[in-house]
Amino acid sequence: MMARASQTRRGGAPARSYGITGWGAAFLRGFVPASGPNVKPADSRRISKARSYFRDRHVHALAVGPGRITSSVTGSQLDPFAVTIELRTVDAETVAGLLRRADRLADLTEAARGGQPSGLLEFVAPTDSGDVTIACTCPVDDVCIHVLATAFEVAAMIDREPGVLLSVMGAPLGDLLAVANAAPLPDAGDGGPEPAAPVIDDFYGDHTAYPPPPTLTDFHVFTEFEAPLLRRALRATGIAALDVAEATDELADLYDRITGRR
Image 1 (cartoon, rainbow, N blue to C red):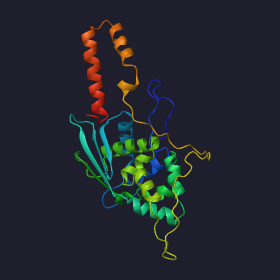
Image 2: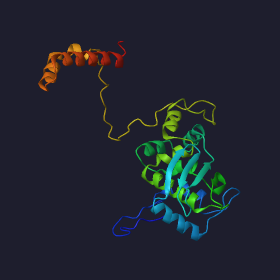
Image 3: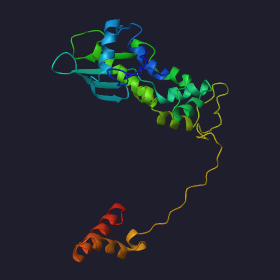
Image 4: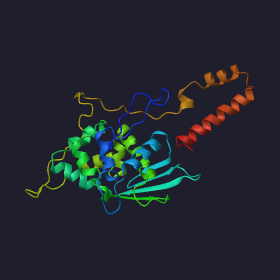
């Protein structure tokens, strides 16, 4: 289920869109298409109303975390409705292992570059409504317009930043990379480990060899730099000499505290 953005809406304002990418659309599988024990399919009227809520920005206080989404949605009543969505999460180690066995670790490199690889999506996205549990303070027992509008907002976030899907499914990209770059899983064929190799060894794909970062020597700013110049600049503003002295002393003390010298 996806909404395509039209060019203009209501006097020239661009229409908002959701689910226009593969990852954003995949997130919505748990809310719209199939029935399940926790979530029932929404009818077309609710989808249309929820789409209006999304486009008119009725969803507020959206919070997205691993396996849990909450929001406050303004509706036909004075008080907003509270929405809670819980998703069955995946394990980063399991996903990394599946990618390794499928020879798809390069998907993590693509995801780190902002791509949406289909192999990684297959292992993390909700497969059906059974992966989703919903709750809303409105009187509707099924998938209500408030839940749908919230799901559309999250899908729009995923369209803009695919890593949101990984985070909400409990396997942030940073965790996946850390696991994949750690000791490899044993090879089921011979029981021995595969050769370790970084997932991302050439991030920009240009094979450039970068020099190591420089080693910085420790120094004190007020010793190495020209403190008299600072005092002269402060005096030029018309500040009294005594105030200038106090100001420079306070700056030196603050610098010592920040750098751990005191």
